[in-house]
Length: 96
Image (tube, rainbow, N blue to C red; front, side):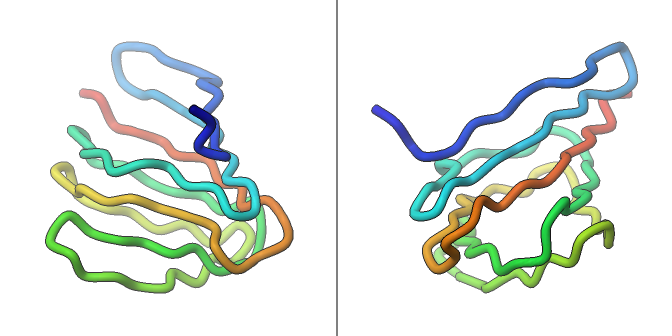
């Protein structure tokens, strides 16, 4: 089953995992939990929809090159329900 999203691991070592994520129009990264603290670097300016495990939802405004961080334990689904373009970002997980 296609979710309209995919992640390409660019680098992984004992300290970091770097993944470039693409969410196509109408696509979704299904509900998942982050076991590590991470940084997101948006490669586009757009709006991403986030549904948290507790049911709360937000529209996350992404700005190209403006990074943000989230703690380990974050659990959510992210999607691209409104844009006609791909949402693309790089995620850097701090493994150690």
